Length: 231
Picture 1 (cartoon, one colour):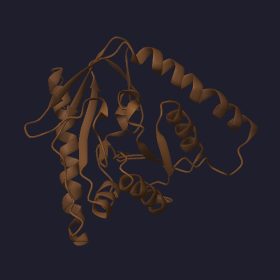
Picture 2 (tube, rainbow, N blue to C red):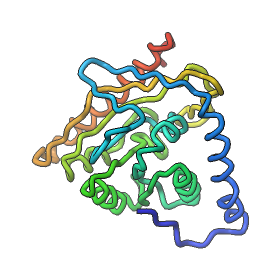
Picture 3 (cartoon, rainbow, N blue to C red):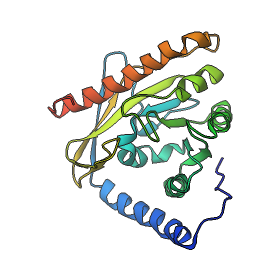
Picture 4 (cartoon, rainbow, N blue to C red):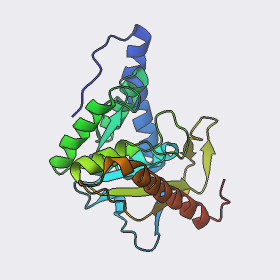
């Protein structure tokens, strides 16, 4: 499913693309092996540790926990929708080093093409992943993409959050989390969201709100696991 951007990059950008993904892969691979993952799940939720056993399904989480999710779910070889920008190319090459696949598009550009790519993944029995509030936010507000994909395919949507007990929080729109070495990380699952293929499109917003609430419950449950106050 990978499709590297065909538009030319500057010399500086080509150098960044050649070095940064490998550097991120090496550093994350070393530090992440010191993390300790602890699964928590709300009543009625069915967690899939490390994504094992996941089939034709959709996973959703907030953009801020991309780093721990990248390491935790690396064995799934899931496909992720990534924008066509230079930053998207940088992300794509990094994700590939961890065994993920990508299809290009975003909520603002190329979205339909990206969804069709993920539809093919689901239909072939693969796993699709969304950073539900990415790539530009607003924070903790899921886009409509996962709902549309679930409606097209009948796949269920898994909502979860990975919360480090100790982390550096970036001053970015998503409050991006960089877990510290040797920290514990709560892998928090909420109940699955279902969007039947015959569900009326006029009620998609209702399902989007249901998914949004599920991911938020997972986040708040993870915070409570470490005795942290909700934001």
